[in-house]
Image (cartoon, one colour):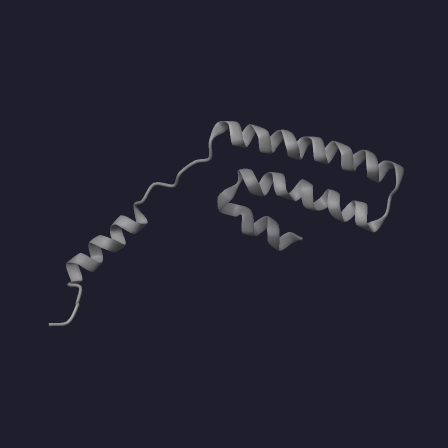
Length: 83
């Protein structure tokens, strides 16, 4: 006899997969990431002020874009499309 999955069982697997909870990151990790990004943005802003070139602007734009993407999981691809 073959290894077949019945239709109701397949439906149950699909339902469980779609109803699985999304695990949220730990608060400490989010705080550490936010602090790192804020410090990086501040440093890069000063760097751009003193030496305005394409590489510095690119790095600043990437770090600045990372912050809203990190906190807006569902619409991250929308922000990525704008760059």
